[in-house]
Length: 303
Ligand SMILES: NC(=O)CCC(=O)C(=O)O
Image (cartoon, rainbow, N blue to C red; front, side, top):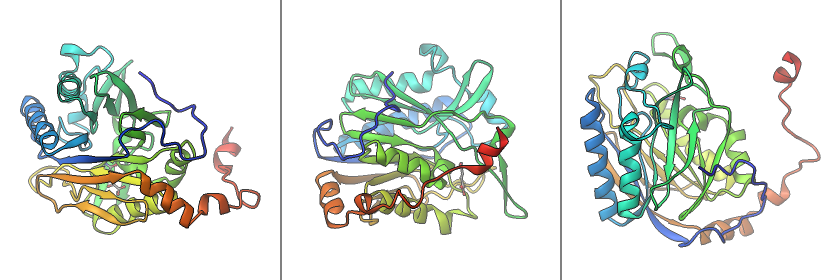
């Protein structure tokens, strides 16, 4: 496993990635209560995306289990043990190797050391696990009469940002609620990320206004690509997802998107555009770090 959290490159380095241009597949999947069925379904969708030319495939947040605090402990897998202990990631590893593609495996509930996490695994074209991101910012939201969800009832927050070098560029990973924190995206950009991937399942209250806005904001602020992937909407389930998986370009433009039904969205990524955008609009160089820097006073004072 090679998580590159320690990289400190502040300039755009395209040396690590060949090709500059490639297709990404976003698999907006229907999720059921039957884990085996979910795994078989995801397998088929990844194969379909690859057959359409995708060299990078992104899955949704919590694609092997219903999205609920009751389900997380039941569907959780021991990813580090692998094999039979983690049939979901075994399938992802297998397919990445067979199809020679990079897979950002959405997220699944992970059991580790007595804790549960919401975890995204990244597999390289050799099928090896390259990185594992545990959702850093848990989704605890209470909008009375609209949406109440407390991931912290069952889940533990991850402790590290995850940026990983793959055959299709340097990629920063966040999971859903993580997208609300611009500092995380800025950290990835400062470390040379070309693309940010957020498996996510926004809700029906915030989704319409915030989902696309946040993606476009993260892409525009940092002048990089942002890709998201949601489960398809199931109005009969306890948690109804907004859908609308999307690829946004470094100009803040929506390059590919969909509505709320099952879909495989294929988008084109061209990293040569990044340098061009940053030359035309050099906000990174114009930043006045001498006048403002982020200090978390609340956290400082609590220690
Ligand atoms: N699964 C999530 O983290 C949902 C986040 C969400 O809906 C939001 O508004 O933020």
